[in-house]
Length: 421
DNA sequence: CCGATTGTTCAGCCAGCTTG
DNA sequence: CAAGCTGGCTGAACAATCGG
Image (cartoon, rainbow, N blue to C red; front, side):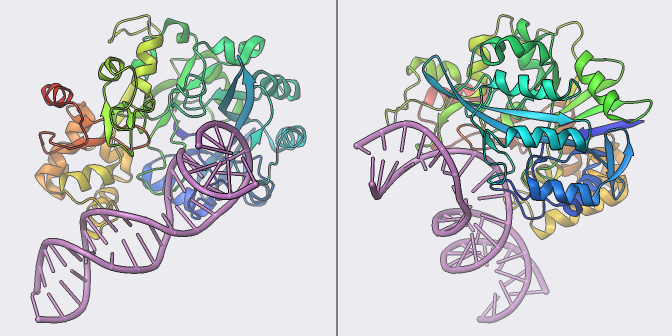
């Protein structure tokens, strides 16, 4: 059976999330998108956990079901600790095999932070201590460093991260099997660092809203004989290429931290340009927010385009809402017209991922404007340029062959280089 | 010309850290 | 010790534009 899984998302008990991130909203969103396995998110939060225990039915060992959508118990925690005299804040995705073990996890973690305060609790623990604690509860618990390249709160992040996984997880690194690439990087970027070859690269949305332009933006596609926790655990642990078919990605340029820059100063720069400026903002003279591409370049020991031999392939997409709204030049994702077209396509092809990955051009053209059909194919085939994201600003796809003329470039040369891409 | 739709901006949520 | 900043999303308020 084919499983399309988004394992990292949040409940309404996390800060800055939509109230619709409840089980009904999530299952509705998953069906529209074409996902059949979701992480529950936030199992550390007592109210959310109570809801999960009450509403989820056990399906198979470690897998639960609600309204025909499967769930696996997951949460994200933030560890804050000092190392090398600096504050380190690192996010970790945690998967657990059953509610009994979740109860044990929560009992221990509650000693290190207030689990009620946020669905994504802050723990006064070193990353290595967190892993040690979890593994001592159960070897079946999976700890995955979350969105490893984003500047804030991540393993390799420019603001509070490390250059080597070992520096973060120390002797507990032996229990780390996978890394979450995050929106601003794709597997190809990670393949440039030989140290990462042994890790399974997983992709999740970290969604805060169940809307199809957020949930399932990134996902993992598995082919399983049967669905249970052990299967998922083993695939991720062993990087089983026969069962891990591919990951679904957005173009890393779309991510909010791909390039370097300052949102407020309207400065965004390719790492090469930033380095020429000593990573100092030409407007406010303060250090730039260094993005994902820059960090990958710093740590890479291989050229662009290198593919490790056991790499799991990936496909790049964009949320359908964005393709439609950018094609029609409507900025509002939820405009009536965009929703109408989206619904028409989803009704015909069953779900959004079918539209994005499978739908044939002739069929698309029968249903919608030729330009929209063409752009769906363009995105699928990667024939598309972006205005890259930076310092928390999403990247923008250039679906109408626009030339980029924007005040946000401080360097005319960066602008002309960009238009040549 | 007026109502409907779309575009744009911004407060609010909140803890916890840094800065002055 | 207060002020400012951070994250990501909602949804209100208001402005602009579309279309019948």
